[in-house]
Length: 59
Image (cartoon, rainbow, N blue to C red; front, side, top):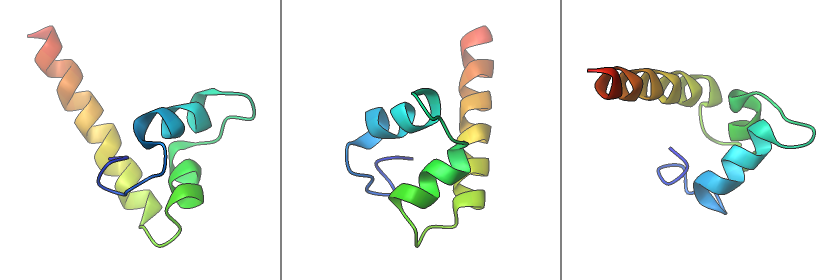
């Protein structure tokens, strides 16, 4: 997702924003990095992909 949205710093920057000091929700982090993106839809897609990835690992 970070790559698709062309977020400066990529996944590491997004991860730091949602897990670091002063952490914010994934949607808020997306809004901060890509204000023109549909943050709610992008966060929903990211959460679904993560869930699907976890299912694949469990299988």
